[in-house]
Image 1: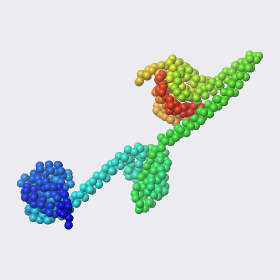
Image 2 (image 1 turned 90 degrees about the horizontal axis):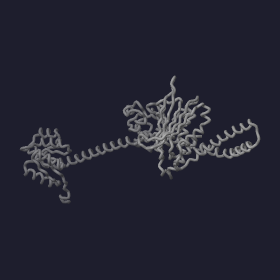
Image 3 (image 1 turned 90 degrees about the vertical axis):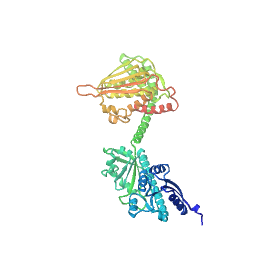
Image 4 (image 1 turned 45 degrees about the horizontal axis):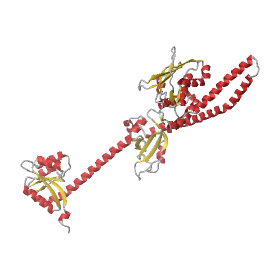
Length: 526
C-alpha cells in the first residue's frame, strides 16, 4: 500500500480561527485523511484581506464565532475579493437555520467541529467543483479573446465578409463589406437586405456548393446601396458541419467579396496602352518609309526648277516645294516623338513649343484660331524632351479642340521661383478662349479614362501629362470658366517645371521605364 505521503494532496488553506488548539487539531485531521495542507491562520478582517491579497488560497474554512470577527463577515470579504474561493463554515455548535442562512449567503457548506469526518468529502467536492469553474471561466475567457481577435482580424482585412444563411439572411458584415456596399451595419443585419439583393443569382452558387470546401473564387456583379453595379471576386464556403441537409435554408455560409474595380481599370489601362504603343510604332514606321519617296520627289522638283518655265509654272513649283517641306517636317516630328531619349537632356523651351505648334498648323488655320506666343525663358530645361513635348501636345490639342469655331490661343514661357519650394524653374502657360469647364469636370480632369470628347477621346492625355509633370517634380494647375449666354469661357493650364528637371542619375531602370512610357505618348499623338 502506498505511503500516505505519496497520496497526500497539497492544498492551500486559509483558516479563520482564534483557537490555536482547534487549528492544530484540524490540520492533523486533514493530514491523516490524505491532504498536505499549507495552513494560514487569521483572526481579524485585516489579516484575512492581507492573506488573500498575498496568496489566494484553494479553500477558506471559517469559524462562525470569533471575538473580533465572524464567519459571516469572513464570507462577505471572500465575495468582495473577486476570487472564486470555496468557503466552508465551521462551528462548535450551529443551528440548522444558521447553516441554511450561511449557504444562502454564498457558503458552499457547513461542518461542525464535532463531525470533522464530513469535512473530507466536502473539501474534495468543493475543490473539484472550483477547478471545474476555473476551467469553465478560462474557456469562456479564451472564447471571448478568440471572438475579439476574430472581429479585429476580419474588420482589418481589405476583403468584404458577409456571414449569413443560405436563405439570404445576413447575420454579420465586416467593415470592408459595409464600406464597399454602402449599407449601414445595422441595416445589413436587420433582415431588410439579403445576400440575394447584393449578389443577384447567388442562390445558384449555393446549390452548386455541395461540399464543405471553399468554392473556387469567381467573378460576380455586386449591387451597392446606390444601385451601382461593381465587378467583384466572390468566394463561398459553408460554416456548418456535415450532417445538415444541404437543401435546408438554415445553412450558415460565408461570402468573401473583393472589389475588382481598380484591377479592371488597371487592365483597361494596360490594354489601351498596348494598343496606343502599337499605333505609335506603326506611325513611326510609316513616317520612316515616307522619307524615301519624299527625298525622290524633292530631287525631282529641284531638277524641274533648274529648267526654263513661265512664271505661273514656277509659282506652282514653289507651292509644291512648300507643301513638301511641311510633309517632311511632319514625318521628322513623328519620328522624334517615337524615338524618345533614355536620359534627360538640356532643351530650349521656346524651340520645343515651336516644334509642337508646327504639328497643329493646319488645324489652327482650318479652325480660324489665332495664336499668340511669348517666350521669356532663356535658360535651357533639363528634362526628358519627348515627355515634355508630349505634355505640350496634349494641352495644345485640347485647347484647339475647345475652339472648333475659332478663338485665341496664348502660349507663354517665363522663368520664376516656385512659391512653395523656392526652386527656380520654367512656367509654361497655355490659354484658350474655348467653351471652358465646370467645377465637376475640373475635379475629374486628371483621372484616367475621364473624357468630355465622347468616343473620340481616350481620357488618357491629361492623366499622362500629370504623371509626366509629377515625375519631373513639377506641378500642373488649371483654371477654367464655363461659357454662358452673353459671357465667354476659356481655360488656362499653368505648368511649373524645375530647370534642374529630373535627377541626373535617372538611368538604368528609370531610363527603361521612360522608354516604355514613350510608347504610350507616341500612341496618343497618333
